Length: 62
Ligand code: SF4
Image (cartoon, rainbow, N blue to C red; front, side, top):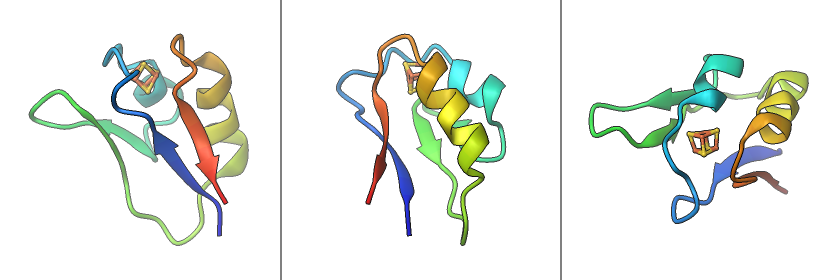
């Protein structure tokens, strides 16, 4: 299964991924991005977040 991962060292916590794909990405109380556990991730939405992330720090782990 493909799982989206965020390279936390690169993430600037801009929140764009959460805006684009709120079902998967969530800024938590500490203002860090979390990938929400899902059985199957919505591929098109995650791809959109990958494309939109200004730091290019989201990818699929295969
Ligand atoms: S869009 Fe990229 S840089 Fe912005 S919060 Fe999401 S993972 Fe971090």
